[in-house]
Length: 209
Image 1 (cartoon, helix red, strand yellow):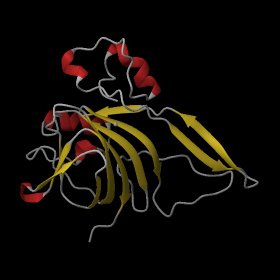
Image 2 (tube, helix red, strand yellow; image 1 turned 120 degrees about the vertical axis):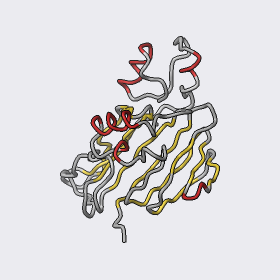
Image 3 (tube, rainbow, N blue to C red; image 1 turned 180 degrees about the vertical axis):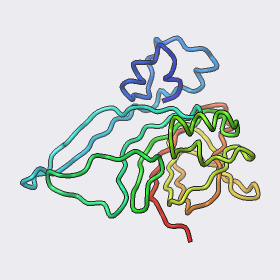
Image 4 (cartoon, rainbow, N blue to C red; image 1 turned 90 degrees about the vertical axis):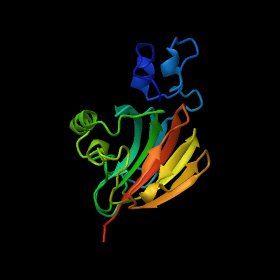
C-alpha cells in the first residue's frame, strides 16, 4: 500500500480504503500500471469487553494516505512503552508520528510506484509538511531513496518486484513471498519493474547503540 486511487474515477476507492479497482473505470495507460486488482484490504479488530468476553470490535476499510507518490494503508499502531491488552479499556491505535517511539509499533501496507520522487528536495519538504516525522524527513536528498530508521522492520512482499539496496550498492531482489528483517540498516527500496510493488511492513521502535 492502492495504486492510482487519486484519479477522479477512483475516488470512491480512496474513501473506502479498497485497493482493487472497478474494471469499468477508464484509466490512462501511464496510470494503469499503478493499479492493483489483486487485493482488497480490510481490517478486523478484536477486543475484550469489561467482563472479559472476546468480541469483534470493528471491521472495515482503512483510509489511504499518499506521500511522495507512495501509497500507505496504516493498519495499526501502538504507542510508546510496553503494549497492554485490557478488558473494555484498550487504547485506540496510534499512527503519529509515522515512525514509532521506543516500545511502539506500526503495521502498514505500502505500495511503491515504478518511480517515486524520493530524491527531489522540494518533494521531500512537502512530504515532511504533509506527514511530520514521516518518510520525507528520513530520505536522503543526495542519494534518492536511501534512509535509515531506529527500528526493527519486518517486511513481506505481496506482489511485484523490488530491489533492496544497502551500503556500497549491494542489492537483493525481493519478490512475492520474500520476507525481510532489517535491523536499523541504511537502505533503499528500488522499483525498476515498471509495475506496482506491494509490501507489508511492521516497524518496532528500537534503541540505536
